Image (cartoon, rainbow, N blue to C red; front, side, top):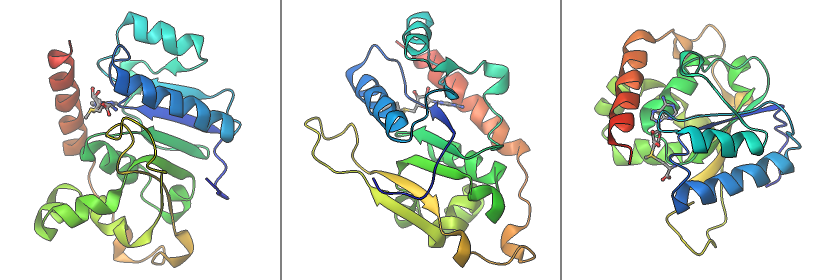
Length: 201
Ligand SMILES: C[S@@+](CC[C@H](N)C(=O)[O-])C[C@H]1O[C@@H](n2cnc3c(N)ncnc32)[C@H](O)[C@@H]1O
């Protein structure tokens, strides 16, 4: 994966319960990716389904679990790789919305689902209403798909490494960058977490 994007921090969202094969394989790829980018400190993770054994496993791999009261702050303060395999669209929307300027998106890289596929699969009306930032940014994605040669092919399918084509983006004063509220989205995210927590096995 050739890239001029050099993250100094990594955050894994939505890995799931690490007692299962698929999240564990995704964790293995996260560790490899951190090595590749030489991120040896500043490695974090959060998933509302984590249990004590998940937290201990992550700690042994030098990944700190973010406490729930800090896990909904998506604003980047340094170049950050978000590792988000198969996260719900609302989580991608939150990362974009919290960093909604060309300058900040320049510090964001996402290893996760192909954001264009949400736009391809849903109506324009639904995307504009529910995921306005995913919709707006879809013309400015620099998306490199992962090789599809893993034996359990549902584990990494549709994943790609996404950065943003900052130089092609509209000017800072363009209405493209108008602020979009975060409060409703935050409430939706917290409901989603509760739903996942209550269904964890
Ligand atoms: C569709 S599952 C994907 C799990 C795993 N990555 C996989 O591919 O099987 C989405 C995951 O996102 C997690 N999640 C929900 N809300 C979250 C939040 N606010 N922050 C981080 N993870 C969240 C859920 O608990 C769940 O494990």
